[in-house]
Structure formats: structure tokens, C-alpha cells
Length: 391
Ligand SMILES: [Cu+2]
Image (tube, rainbow, N blue to C red; front, top):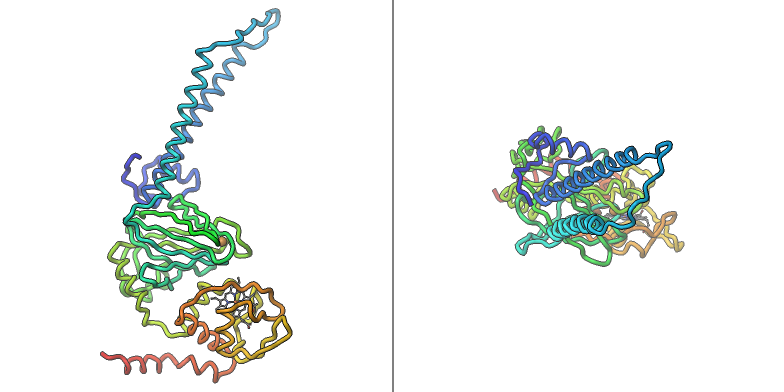
């Protein structure tokens, strides 16, 4: 593999590289392996082009040179030319063998991770990706992509990372165009791939405060203020239902030590109330099926369901109290709401997240007393926190 000084900044690419990324609608490669893939691809492209030009030129030449002329009788052609036939069989075969090995080695580079790679778990579920870090924490930060709020997965640069992936329902495929990698994510088998992302170019920097964050793609996280980052989008590349095209996430590459600081932040998320946490869980894992504004979706809306009577497909009914909501999440098929299919996936939530969802659903109640039980006015909440805090 040729080693280039590559960056993900398109302006820093050579003219030829920039031209071809634009020509094939490619974003700049985000890993050394992606550069190798691009090089291989371009080599094949030139190789085919050269042969095409040569063969078509020869064809044109023969058509003219040996065209039928009035009054001339066509020569009989020789039936065999052994050296020529051996040449045009062996030479292309050697090229094909070369292409096979280039592709095979490139593939092995993509699948076989170095032993010291950090392993992270990715789960695909209709229609979201979630990531669990080595310390057990889950990403709770999001960014906007088009009209959708999608999860952000922070990853350290220049560190080999192995993604270990499984699906909780149907087949998905994790596709990171910037890494030139696409891998099926299956319900019954773990699949993996690995990558080592280039260091961020420095074009994009984490906002320094909340105000700056409003116009930025990165949320304000005090520990990451001023840290450069690079985003690589993850898509689902296996048609998996209604919102397949919106099943996206972002791999956000930051430096090693910024990543370590961030792991600490998500391992000890003390900055969120249960309602806020519930809202994040909703955004990341439930919003594709449950609205909070009263509109019908794949699943029932969460607006004003708390303490109301729910009717089920088996004719029974129950009041939606805390226990009911909890059981609806832990055992989705037990009571199926009338008018809806038994379509709710089993999405494992941690205890804090479960409590968060319950609090969030309460906060969507029309009953002011229910709301008040979870939503203290922000000013008071701050004051209480201030008093309780040991410092
Ligand atoms: Cu999918």
C-alpha cells in the first residue's frame, strides 16, 4: 500500500484526488484503509479505461484496414496462432490474479483487527443505532441530520477500534461511506469490523459555550470545549422498513485524551433529571414509533396517556400507571394496545433510563398534578440541587 499524507479535509487533497472524489461522489476517506480502497478502485478504473481505449482503437483500426473493397476478394484468415493465443490468455489472467490478491488483502485488512483494538458494541434496532462503550456507558448525545436527531458516537482518533454488532430485530447493515466499509448487522450472529480513524483536521471545533453550541453541530460539553472533531456518518444499508432511510448515526472522532475525558462524562451523567434522561431515550430509541404531540404513528402517542384507561386487543383494559408503562417496555407483547399491531420491539433499557421514560411520559400528561410530580420549576430545582451539593 502506498502511504500518502492524507487528510479528511477536501481542500488539502491533491487536485487529482479531489477530482476523483467529486467525480464518484465520494467524501474524502477517513482512514488509511479507505485510502487503500480508493487507490485500488482508481487503479482498476484506469486499468479498465486503458484496455477499453486500446481494444476499441484496435477494433476501429481493423474495421477500416480490412474493410470490404469492391473488386477485392477477402483473404482467408489463419485458423490458429498459438503464441498469440497463449499471450492473450496468460497476460490478462496474470492481471486478474493480481487484482484478486489486491482485493483479498484489502478485504483481510478490513476484517482482521489488530489484537490491541478497543471493542465497542453496536446494536441495530428498527430504526436506530446504539453504542455501548467499554465502560458500559451509552451515548446520550445527539446531533441533527436533516430533520432528524441522530445519536453521536464519540471515538478516539488514531486508535484501532473494533465494532461488535448485533441486531435486535431484522437485518440491518452498518455503512460508513467515509471509511469505505459496509457490514451486515444480523439478528442471530455477531459481526465485526474495525477501523482506525485519522486525526481531525481541525476545521471543526467543539463549541466553547451553550450559546455557540446553538449554531453548531456539536453539543456544548464543558469537558470538550475547544476540542477539534471530525464527523463520519453511519447509514443503514439494508432495507429494514418504514424509517430505514433515517436510520443514521454519527461517528465523531476526537483526540485520545478528549475521548478519555468524555468517557468520564457519560459514565457519571449527573447533569440530567429523570425527565431529561427520558426525553433523550425517547429521541434515540422510541421517537421513530411514538409521538409526543398526540399524533398516531407506528405506535400510540405518549401524550396524555398516563393515568388514562388503555384497551387491549384481547378485550381487557388497564389504567396506564407507572407499573403498566414499565411492563409495556419490559414485556411489549403482553398487552397489545387496541388498534395497533404487536410491533413493539424489546429494547433493553437500564433502570435509570426506565425511570426516565416513566417520568417523561408523566411530564406529557394534561393533568397538572401528574406533571408537577416530575417537573419542579427549573429555578427551584437548581436551588435544591445547590443546597444538596456537598460543596
Ligand atoms: Cu436498518
